[in-house]
Image (cartoon, rainbow, N blue to C red; front, side, top):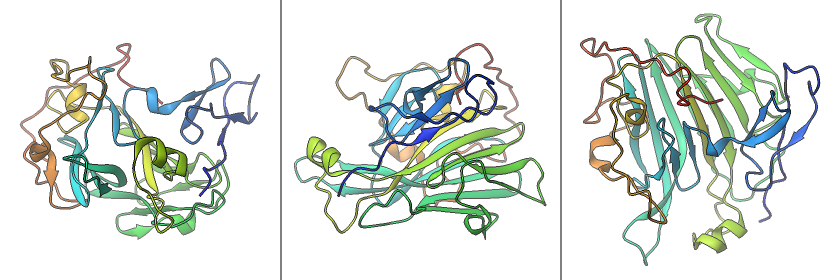
Length: 289
């Protein structure tokens, strides 16, 4: 199972490199963004708000950490009074370790009275020309309404502030909800090379297609919680041991929820109006994309 070819990203605003295909760097061949100020591609997995790999997080405070969770379970990534995001983890058990190898297979996003599902289809062999994304808005499929052409866009006729656009012909999207959040999501496989290096034990029956995600939040409160969300609080003090090879965030029990669209994790803030302290992060380096 060969790895997918590098993606190309384009700038839409800078006249000097507008629509020029920019290949993703070798260290992130499937997950990069166009820095239109510099007219160059940059790895999206290294920016605050990134969730990539096994899952590797970059917090709002800029600190990188891992959160392994458990395979076939759901965990709360962000929970605020008008935004709740869960992730469903897939994975494999390594008998040599006390934990699962895990990856984010889907995310469930809830805001106002709406919900968005972004998921990676299971597949045995990877074909970059095939779209492995599953999308729905309020339980209605979006994928068939979004042509497989970079730049194609779907707008909700019911909720005008919601749009979904392609960042590549297949397997890459940008979700924008005005005054709330922007999310980039890419479906990527586990390659034979990755499997060999990390000892994942991936076979030809399942390449464990998963999501690499980047979040930008526009209107969080200072009570926000969740694996990633808590790192955006102004008073957040990380307890991550950053000087170890793999800094890990524990406390999975606090973030576990019973389903992709359930808000019953212990740290849930969704719909609770008593949390009203606003947070502004402009100029603090806590937002990306």
